[in-house]
Length: 327
Ligand SMILES: NC(=O)c1ccc[n+]([C@@H]2O[C@H](COP(=O)([O-])OP(=O)(O)OC[C@H]3O[C@@H](n4cnc5c(N)ncnc54)[C@H](O)[C@@H]3O)[C@@H](O)[C@H]2O)c1
Image (cartoon, rainbow, N blue to C red; front, side, top):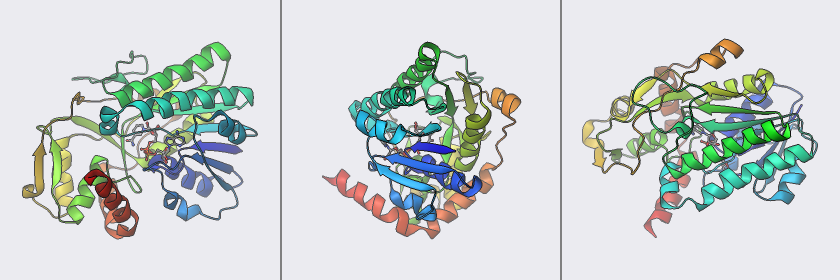
């Protein structure tokens, strides 16, 4: 099988590439990645030189690039996106270009080249916020922040390409991922790396916002199930079964890093901060036999150990970001 993986130098995409080359011998993987601030070729070091891997640096929104990389592919797994909510609040332009225009450009190329399946990787954030209960795949989209709105736009385009143009599209929507190789701006690697450096961690508002945590390896395993056996035109939820408030998460991270509450700095809440996300994952359990396998305690301990042992991976990224922020 020939797979195009967009965003394959990012956090989740690189896990998917490493797992695919490890678990599916004979598969040929082409990675298309723009190498934005969060894309990092070092994420592919464990598979560098693998005969099944080809890397192309380029933008999903560029039709010439899309044509070149999509030609000859059997399937596409589309991760590439601008992903950080805080950045989308400062400026949404790059989010619309990459997430909406980039997805549409790839969908058109997939149609032109007769690609057999297009898996569009999306997020629970497209539904907005839910105080009780869980969203199903039928819940209407109601995004609040620009990042989520751009992902919702790309989801609707992907479904339209299925319904109107007959492209084999499947959408996954997942909860918050954590694990190794996550850029140190997202809450878990930000807090862990700050604590490892003896710095304070910024906790938004009262810490009451609730998220479900999914280990990146479980996420990629579920995407593989959807790629292989999901039904065309369907949406599948993927969750981790570990709902925590940010306050509870902070307590776990402090404990894992041997730090106390004096390391926590309370900062004003993010504008439009969704209170709670919760996905009903019974459809993927029932249809594809998915269940999360990494329990949060074990996954978090392994993640903290990875950041402790791989300072040479995150220190340059973090100090580059801090230098940019200082200007
Ligand atoms: N991280 C999470 O918790 C989470 C949760 C739900 C859904 N998702 C979705 O999963 C996908 C991957 O997220 P991630 O956390 O790995 O993000 P990431 O920011 O770590 O990686 C994104 C990758 O996409 C690349 N990219 C961005 N714009 C591009 C473009 N125009 N053309 C080509 N490459 C481009 C970047 O260089 C980077 O390598 C995204 O679609 C995101 O919306 C992530």
